[in-house]
Length: 280
Image 1 (cartoon, one colour):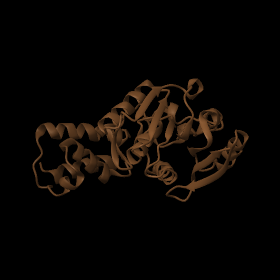
Image 2: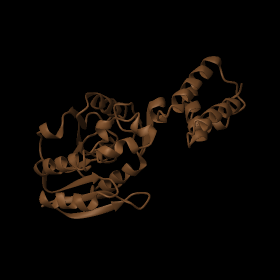
Image 3: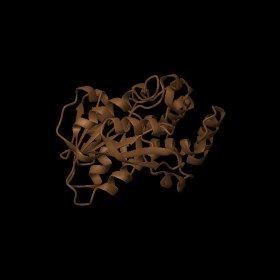
């Protein structure tokens, strides 16, 4: 059996299981199985597959057919300009979150030397991406999950910037640190009762602690804004990723905690996604 034939079989299985991106997912899973770039795979479709590789591939297909996300199966997800190791202890990085990276970099000159805090860092993709771009900045990432912190430390180490980032296992409630120039967060913001309405990939596999924003979706948003007001320097900037209908209420919470001069940034679908505010 060659690569093309096994791709056809894998795609057929996923299509029957109603996996929307069945062709793309099959190609990614076979590429991971063979340790090839997807482009290399598609240039070598006539090559024969080994029995051991075949067994591994169909194991991947079986997992995907049960809606397990591709990133958890392969163990990696591309984000910004790097590949990040991920597992079920962290949310899978999304393209929309790259908007935060873009906005932070606009605020930081190439020679800036700033202290940045990332609240709820997960796999560390946000703070690591920023520190990679701004070589004189220093970052701290905190997360309530010990396993997430372990993963973030690994990602910083393999990208050779662990000397400029610290990752700490801490809830924002109990975190005490220096004053920061910038604070960034992609907090849990989905209403509790809407978790079960999410796609199967998300609700059955991604960590609920990183999704659940409480009854009204603002539990962690309120807490992060309130705590950030004590952790951020005067004229420091807070960057928040939000749900598409959370802008108005979040602006009220920001103002109550001394954050003004707000700017709302839209995502790839032209929906409100990120708020930048300044501490007065």
